[in-house]
Image (tube, rainbow, N blue to C red):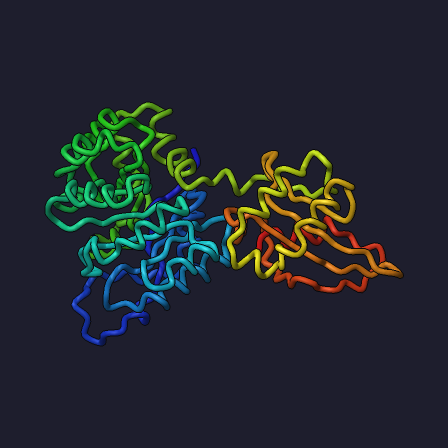
Length: 379
């Protein structure tokens, strides 16, 4: 059975800015070491988070997450801490964010704009709520960003490694189908099962909070990562339910299917006219100005209708990119426009990070435009 761990901390103690920090949970976890843990325990992918404390530099912490993700893009799903680089981080490939209202000593009003931004780009957030009134906190967030997908860390449990408050949280948040529950440090199989019965088994997902368990049970020499999974086997869950908790729910929530979506590039067809024009007109004013679109749109329309000099990138039968070139003598080509739909930019699942420059001249006879565009569609 495939497994996605939806709560893993990756980071180094040296990112701590305060020599005598109050934070005493040793969450030091080198990503190269954790890959070995994943391999040993049949973990297909892990959602990785920085060390969540105000004394840890968020820039360094987020950068390390991105380094880990860049090294193992098929194994790690990066989430960042919220700081003034949130938008930049999401655009470069972070799939969501995490906020710890206890350790980071912030409140909902301080992150209001961040919540609205995450909602606008359909990026989920993992919330570690404050100790009291956790349901109230989640509902307050939903008033600000009603469509934001929220993962309630530890199912909002009270005392660590117990099911305290889990059932109450599930009952109060049942009607909010964009709120999900993550099982780390709950350790109570019956509470997990009952929560599944209340909210549905498509809203509960497995998480380990590694290496917190290792630090918590530091006096227990026999601790192993596999211990995080054992308690679920005692819940009397059906195979289908267990599969959802361990893999399917996180896979769907994080839209991991897009990692396998093919991108094809082909010559323009007259029937593409409306989709391409819509793509161009929906660009931001900055993009339009950069492309000098006001002066070129008539020419572009003519070329599309004539099915000349233009190419489109297609994913799931939708045009997600457009390129126009103008031929030159002796096989030279001038790239006039290269456009990628904003929603599909920085999508590293196309596994290319090539910087393309508008009006770049290619001095290669019989240049293969379609090969180039497949590489540039990830801009």
